[in-house]
Image (cartoon, rainbow, N blue to C red; front, side):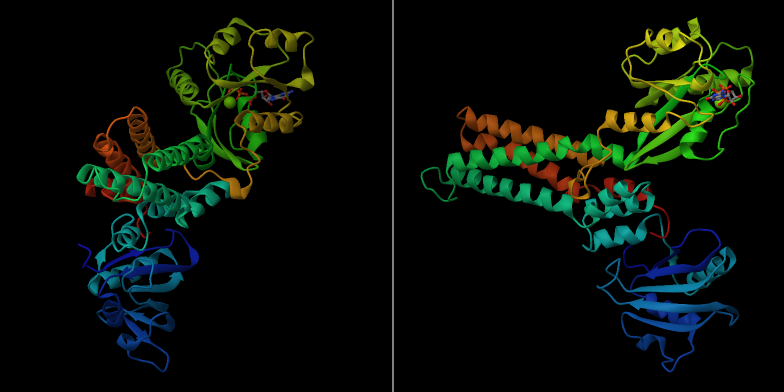
Length: 459
Ligand SMILES: Nc1nc2c(ncn2[C@@H]2O[C@H](COP(=O)(O)OP(=O)(O)OP(=O)(O)O)[C@@H](O)[C@H]2O)c(=O)[nH]1
Ligand SMILES: [Mg+2]
């Protein structure tokens, strides 16, 4: 299908200053020439030079004016997709961009699928698979650090590391083949000790990459955080004060929050995916019960639980039961309403659980800085220097690297146990294939399709 010329709207579906329709493929310029009437001296679109911009009018095939536009032409292979690309920028109303796209389709382009431009860039060798995946991570990044992670990957930092390990393993493979075919001669130029060193170094590099995964994933996806507690303790007030706006409804009526309310919060480099939940209690109200079920669901999925308690009251049996459910989770006891604290309440709550606690008042904002500092400390990734950002954050890459690590480990232990070179073949071969998967070597079409399905149309 790569010989078809495709087109899509590449700007968001909303009102903006400009909207862009991108066309990619052999016939990009030819299609544009059917609908673009240049206003400059150069009136022959087919003679436009690569990497030039032209002002003109878009007319559909019936001759009706669609809009004014700027045409940017990038000839293959020096374009995003590696193919001929034309970008038409018109006024950014949904209607004019859609009308422009329709004119382009009528002139002979096919509507592009999700991520088809980036997929073409991959298939044409402009980007490897890890780099292509970084494109969608850049688009969806929610913090500066997440953006930095994705940009690193697009620039090929992860691929460079992977390829460097692959090179070492290829040398090991050459040794294995030489030893197997010509056991008497020193054809590969490597000694068994040098091979061992290469395997060890490969394994160390794989392990170093794997070690960064946790932090990398937190940076990219944020920490799934559930705000949990009895009704009326101030969970929604806490969400609002953390994000700095009145997002969730707050009233003095217990059972105010029904559905889970989600918001992202960036805390100096780490992102919290915050969920305010319904206050947990037994209820005969069907709607409230669904909210309570969702709260339990959020609690189960959470990587961080903010357990909110009300300092103006002594803990009740509901608090005790609920606190037990945070066992095994990273949790913080958030002692709210410190502005009307009941004497002895703090000690009573603290005695219930051995989790770190912070005293706050969502009403006057006191203690919020201490709370965010504690969260950053718990996850130990608030102050990562930009040149120290982990390279690994993608589950697909992680799984491939785990397999590569295991195979390399097996090869190393076979060598250390005195097995002959040919016994290492399968493990080294597997390690090479697993590493290759990260950058897109030997991956099935199905895997590639799955990856690009996650993209938006127009990218
Ligand atoms: N004095 C004081 N009142 C607070 C504080 N935080 C919340 N409140 C009040 O407590 C009441 C309940 O607050 P919410 O934030 O709605 O409590 P919630 O835990 O979300 O309640 P549900 O959604 O019903 O589970 C409201 O009247 C708030 O104004 C605080 O720090 N101090
Ligand atoms: Mg609430």
